[in-house]
Length: 280
Ligand code: NAP
Image (cartoon, rainbow, N blue to C red; front, side, top):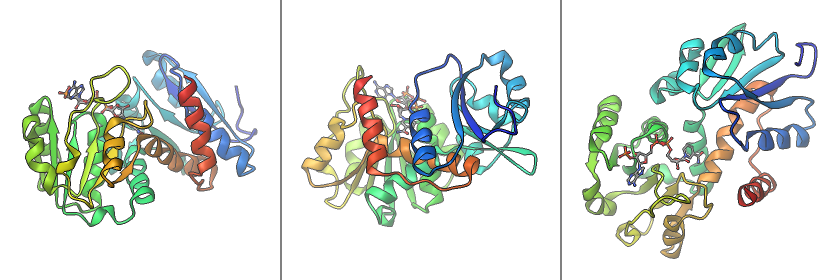
């Protein structure tokens, strides 16, 4: 167990200890920035989570990532910011003046990835978001934060799209799954937050030819890296942003909060994580 006198360390708390790319990403940044620090995976069952969080400093941790099944519980144990509250889940914890704070870095990961892949993407007035689960909440919050005037939320289960639209209020519109085709020509940005197109899931059947020529297509799915949706959008000459980019960019803020330096998402890091994804 690390002690406070040692190099600062962060960890990923989950149950069971799932395979995660986070250690690979944070170790790469620690190594390339020459920072002496650590990042470990901690398997903590739900009944021990609150106790583990209370003991973070004693265990030598300056903060943590939180994953399934603790993301909602973490909101109650730390002081969440607006992003974590809106998403209803925290994935990053850190200390400030002895207080434990919480955010959800999926919002920043989503926005920063689009900024990197398709600068100017936010000049559009309308976006179409497919899905209404946890990832969709982060995406819709990010789009509202960036001032997108109208966000259509299409979901197989329309009640979940309606609930999300109620939560985010003016400018968010629920859309029946069967009505996607009608909205595609208006959308300057299309974001897939469903699991459709993921390995083992059905493909996302959608006609990208209906999008405007300057539309941007973002798929959050990153297994496979190049989804049929992204391939079709590229073939049509549209700008695209992939799920791996979001995964890498969402890790930036945690590292900065824990270790005091803002790291870069480099091609070298991307290649490292790509190789890991294709091996597993
Ligand atoms: P979730 O809360 O379980 O939501 C899943 C969504 O997919 C729901 O809207 C669900 O619709 C929809 N869906 C599932 N199967 C469908 C089908 N056969 N037809 C139509 N819609 C279907 O999951 P999540 O946490 O939001 O994650 C969603 C995806 O985003 C996953 O692929 C995940 O890996 C990815 N993700 C990526 C990143 C990243 O950093 N790149 C971050 C977070 C999530 P219903 O409501 O009708 O069930």
